[in-house]
Length: 496
Ligand SMILES: NC(=O)c1ccc[n+]([C@@H]2O[C@H](COP(=O)([O-])OP(=O)(O)OC[C@H]3O[C@@H](n4cnc5c(N)ncnc54)[C@H](O)[C@@H]3O)[C@@H](O)[C@H]2O)c1
Ligand SMILES: O=C[C@H](O)CS(=O)(=O)O
Image 1 (cartoon, protein in one colour):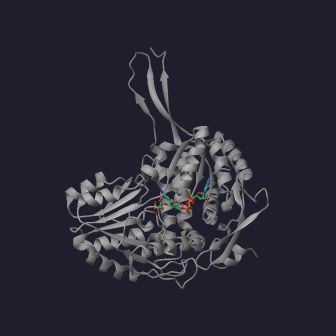
Image 2 (cartoon, protein in one colour):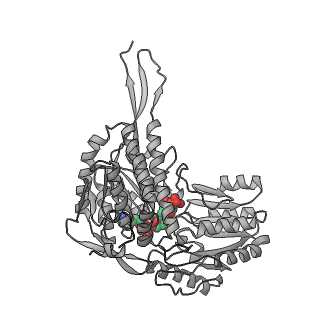
Image 3 (cartoon, protein in one colour):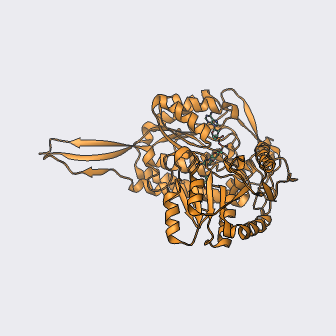
């Protein structure tokens, strides 16, 4: 009995969704090296599965398979592609309980959120399974008799996709959906911590009718990530690379892709400001912060990382926030009834614990938490700090975990300057009941996305992405296919 079959024994309606091999050219394959690596269940700090440890050699096979498949897939009709995406959508929803459990055990995401992510991923397939039916070029008024002028859209070709562990199916569907809808093919490198979700996604894609080679999954251990990334970046056959992850890796990939001048889209790190004005609905602002900050136990790119509360409401807001966060239940991610799970691994806890300790050494005061969590090495206690100064790491670094650093401000001008004083610009939030201020915040906050009086903003129909060093391009929405197509101008003469 394999490690995975033991770990998931009796838990899945579809045990065959657990795949430990890579998926290349429509075949489930071991790594060419024959090697595997072991992933961990962070809730239990226990081995979960042995997975094919693929490398650049396997990636080259996948690129060839995607290129071969592209020659046919590009010529399919939008209706054909739409039917497959819409069936895939249905299969994800039919199997959301199993997919959620798989994701929860490999990532530590609370089970209700994991199942919710499966629905979010299915929404992307549904959305682009309809978008591709209406996606068109345009006719252009001719300046001369006897001519017809038009612009047509054509698929870019083979697309490389590198995805993170915090939304292992959502981020994958956000890329695969528009790419396949446009007629492109894909080579996917999932995060080393969460390969099972990507492989289960591919298993259902196979059942939905995705042809061999159209989507290829190359699982790999962390030490192979850079060689696989380089291979995807420098191989001319790959015409686009889309990445979701940290800014530091995004810069490496963007630089590598310059050698073949690929299209790149980058969904990178965040450092979201969360601003609460005195005129805000304070209970609603507290709830909005809890929803935005503690989703996935604080491990999302759009989590607030800097919380600014105006002086007149600071004490009341702090009191209500401490009470609300104290009510959050933390436990084993794949068991129902918990709001918070572990972080992705014990290393993340060690990194964030050092950030909290540094802040306290520099004068920060813990209102809640800042204590060792007895649940296990990957668990971090929800922590609220006040008396924050801007030289603290907690005030200027992306803290991927359940840490809130509260900062007081006096004026709108002061907080806007502080909020924009960063090279990051993914999401930003402001709570105010003054309409003029709401518009000033939405227009002057330097971010790709702004939430006004709301903490949860992500949606498939919205353009998702950042500015400055939080990314390049947008995913989702009616423009979500643009980066997977080339616009070709056609001028037809001789028609007089
Ligand atoms: N903007 C968004 O939509 C979004 C969404 C989720 C996560 N993120 C960001 O991702 C970060 C956390 O996720 P993470 O820890 O998985 O990020 P990460 O950058 O460490 O890893 C992301 C992916 O890149 C791969 N990778 C790592 N080094 C690589 C290299 N040299 N070449 C090629 N691939 C490489 C990893 O294996 C993984 O698949 C945070 O900064 C978060 O803000 C952004
Ligand atoms: O980490 C952030 C992802 O983009 C997830 S979501 O789109 O905000 O749900």
